[in-house]
Image (cartoon, rainbow over all chains, first blue to last red; front, side):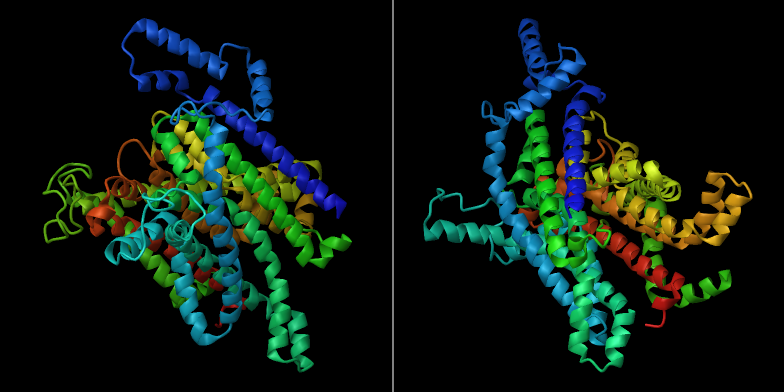
Length: 330
Length: 280
C-alpha cells in the first residue's frame, strides 16, 4: 500500500512540475508577444510612455534575464504565493482574486459531482436488465452525456429562468443584497445556485448511469454470479455483489472524468455569470489578463491533483485488494 | 467473416440509426453551404427575424442567417472532430503499442508520461495555449486537442497489447525474425482493429465537445463559424434575454445529435464485433 501511494504521489508531483513548466513556457515560446499585446491594449499614443510601459512589463515578466534564471525566479515567486498582479482588477494580487472566486466554484462542483455520481450509479444499477427501464434510461442517458454543458445550461436558463421566470439567471446572489448571514441572503444564494447545479448534475448523471448499467450487465455474466444463482441465492443478493464489483471502475472513472467535470463547471459559470473560476477565466481572456489566467490554471491543476488523491484514498477503502497489495490498482 | 460482420451490422438498430444521423449531418455540412449565395457571417436579412420560409432558422440580432451559419458550422465541427480524433488516436496507438509490446523501462517511462497527461485537465491547458495564440484556426485547435486527449486511449491500447504480446502467433513471428514495427502492424493491430475503431469514435466525439467548449469561452477560430462559436455569439449578444431561441437551440442540438449518434454507433459496433453482447 505504501508503494501504491508512493507511486501516485510521484505522478502528482511530476504533474505539478509539468504544469508549472507549461505555465512558464507558453508565454515565452508561443508565437506572439505578450508584452506587445498588453501595450496595444493600453492604447497609449506617446512613444515615451510606450517605452516606459514596455520596460515595466518586460521587467514584470522578467524577460530581460537569462532563461534559466527566469525559470528559477518563476518557481521562487510561486513558492512565495506570488502569482502576480491582476490587470483586470488592478492592483489586486491574482491570488486574492482567485481565492475570492474559489468558494463559488467548489460550491457548485462538489455537490454536483458527488450527487450525480451516487444517483447515477444507483439508478444505472437499478435499470440494468430491467427491460422497460433499460429502454428508456439508455437513450436518455446517451443524449445527456452527449449534451455540451453550456448548451444545457443555456436551455435551463432560458426555459426556467427567462420564460417561466422561476429562477434568476445571473450572478450568485441578488444584485440588491450584500453578503451577510441572513435568511434573505442565504435564500438568494440557494436560488441562484440551483440552475447551474442542476445543469452540471444532469449531464454528469447520464454518463454515470450508462457506465453503471453496462458494468452491471457485464458483472451479471461473471462466474461468481452463475455460482450464486446455482446455489439459489436471491436476486437482490446477487445484484448487491455485482454492484460492489461494478463500482470499482466507476471510482476510477470519477478520477478520469474530473477534467471534463471541471471544464463543464467553467462553461456553466460563464452562462450564468456565476462569479467562480470560469467567470474569472472569461474576464481574463477578454481583458488579456495573462497573470490571472495563468494563476487560475495553476489553481485548477492543484485542485484536480488533490481530488485525484482523495479518490485514490477512497479506492483503497472500497477495494480490499489494494490494501493487501494483491491487486494491481489502476 | 467479413460478411458475417456486415450481416450483423445491418441488423443492428443502434448502429444503423447512429450512422444515418451522422451521414445526414455530414451531407448537410458538405452540400448545404452550396445552396447559399452569401457567406455565413454576411448581413442578409432583417435583424431578429423568427424562423420563416426565407430564413429557416431565423436571423441573429445583426441579421445574419442562422441556417447558413449552422450548415457552415457543421463543417467546422466535423473537421475539428476528425482531425483531433485522428491525431489523438494516432498518438494513443503509438504510445500504447510501444509501451505494451516493449515492456520494461520503455513501458515505465511511457506509462508515467500517459498518467501525467491524463491527470492534467485538458481543457484548462488548452485555454492557456489558445489564449496566447494570436491567430487561431481549426487546424491548430485540432492539433492541440489531439495532443491533450490521447492518454486514456493509450492506456486501453497498452492493456490490450499486453494481453496479445505473449500469444503463440506473436512468438512465432518474433522467432522467425520479424521486426518489431511489423509485428505490431501485422500481428497485433489487426487483432484489435475493432477496438481501435471504437476508440477513434469516442475520441472523435470528445474532440467535438472540447472544441465546442473552447469556442464558447471565446477561444475558437478567429475567422469563420462553428457550432460552438454560434453559442458563444448567442450568449454574448444576449439572445437569451431577447428570446431569440432559434439562435441558440440549433447549434447545441446539432452538437448533441452528432456526439450522441457517435456514442450510440459505438454501442452498436461493440455489439456487432462482440458476439457476447449480441442477442439483447
